Image 1 (cartoon, rainbow, N blue to C red):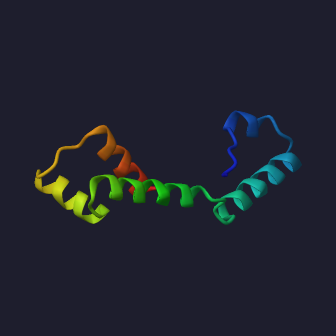
Image 2 (cartoon, helix red, strand yellow; image 1 turned 30 degrees about the vertical axis):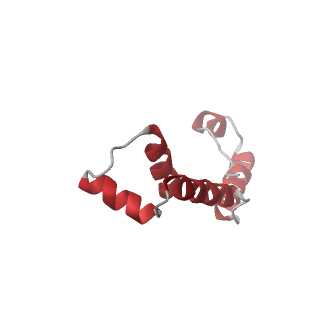
Image 3 (cartoon, rainbow, N blue to C red; image 1 turned 180 degrees about the horizontal axis):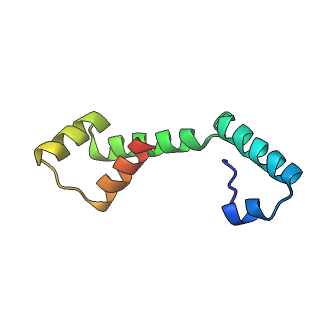
Length: 82
């Protein structure tokens, strides 16, 4: 999981602590995914099975107006964007 660092926290650190915190934040951003993408891909596959269509088909039908955006479709789109 990506680490987070608030600017208010950063400003309260000494120079040495600030440098260490920024290095740690950069390492976290460059680290290998920790399984979160696997969960997103599983969610996408579940939507594809439930609606019996591939994600690309859903996007094309949504763009053409053949289907309407629902809460499920919005969740599916968000997962695809991730």
